[in-house]
Image (cartoon, rainbow, N blue to C red; front, side, top):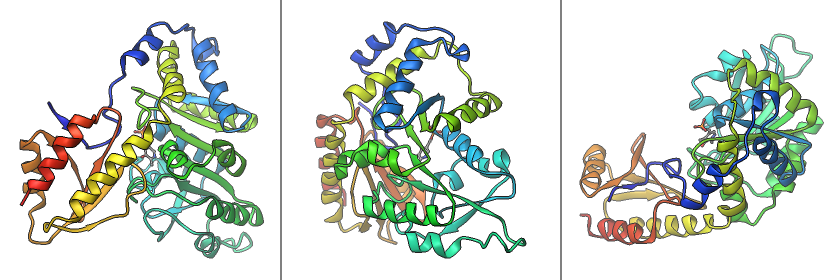
Amino acid sequence: MEINLISDTVTKPTQGMLEAMFKAEVGDDVFKQDPTVNKLERFTAEMFGKEAALFFPSGTMANQTAIKIHTRPGDEVICDKWSHIFLYEGGGVAANSGVSCHLVDGKRGKISANQVKSVINDPEFYHAPITRLVSLENTTNKGGGACYAMEDLQQIKQVCQDYNLKYHLDGARLWNALVAKNQHPKDFGNLFDTISVCLSKGLGAPVGSVLVGSAEDMKKAMRIRKLFGGNMRQSGYLAAAGLYALQNNIGRLSQDHQKAKELGAVISKKQWVAEVAPIETNIVIFTLQPYVDEKLFIEKLKQKNILISSMGQGKLRMVTHMDYRSVMHDYVLEVLEKMQ
Ligand SMILES: *Cc1c(COP(=O)(O)O)cnc(C)c1O
């Protein structure tokens, strides 16, 4: 039995999800004739109170499309220094949209309205790039699953309105935030111009992300997705998995959060740990004492069939998910407890 805590993307479809995929009614989505994709897009748009939505093969492509919708070459995007769009999208911000990131030194991947305000360039000062977009992440990935308070998001929205900036949310793990903070998708839809969400992380679908926004922006997104080569044909089989995930797998995320907290509680008592980052959702990030060899530590767990990952700079990560079952959890807690 291999226990994979490297990411919540490692899940495989359940029987129920596979049946939904098997039964899906499909068509050619490039002609917008796939009823299941159309249904998923309508369902997600309505969930967020947005006019329209578009299904994507990946979260990266959904984010990159949003950035391209909102910007022109030479513009600048304000984001946290740990943002997925900056660190983990292959430099796509520059390659796809010709824009640069104005990085903000946030806390656990979250930035504040004052920080945003302080880095906006004066549009009259023609030497500087035009600040066009603020892109946030919720929950934060490298920030260890931290979530924004609604007031903080509202304050940043106010700055965006005052300075005529677009507002995008990379909500790859927004579902975890909704559950952890008891927030509602429509409140997010109200604030942001566009939101990307992943179906293939905590929700357990094999593939897929959705971008929501205005009808006008989603029309632009169609063209950009085509340009990126992201059009799919009978993608209703994948959309069926996504719909099933949205209808069945959001509430259960609280179980993943509970397990993450229990892992944190055990680890924080161990001598070999220097620090455990606060655990708000399903990500546990911890730092080893300087005398502990990181590679050896990971290898020791691997020999016990437990896979975890390194984030560099001495930080290790464990992510709980649907396929991390209670029997596995009990075993992992026991192994960690016994580690010297
Ligand atoms: C996973 C993730 C994405 C998208 O990743 P894909 O692998 O392209 O689906 C985007 N943003 C964040 C914060 C993520 O964690």
